[in-house]
Image 1 (cartoon, rainbow, N blue to C red):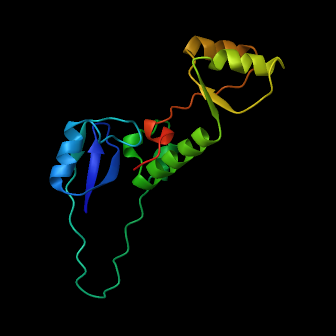
Image 2 (image 1 turned 30 degrees about the vertical axis):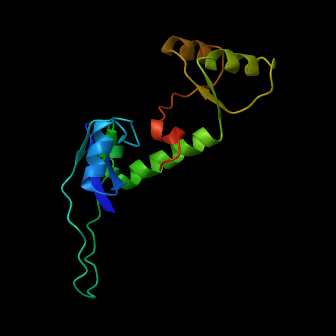
Length: 158
């Protein structure tokens, strides 16, 4: 089994497991290798070194990243600058949202209105709405929140 460090064109870093280099190249050519955060198929291998167990030495302490200071600034944090642990946490959260909501697709605005007016039973929904529809819902007092969900959150990873 080959474990490869991969990166999409948006800078998201992730790991892929393949039977061989040929297996990786074949899957990449067929568009089967996708970023789990943004579904980008433009994937590159990153340089990686195999872990060699050369003795029973204590592992060196990893330097502590100061990623919190980025979040505290006025500049928005790009997903590609987030540490892999935060990217993984975001993907886990997105999967929970998908697992606990019903996808109503483009009917989102209509379903939200019907629930708000008591025409149908309230339930957790997600779907697509235009920016104009979202603003109209907010003007009507219906709470909505844009939440871009990566394609990988909607399916089981193999």
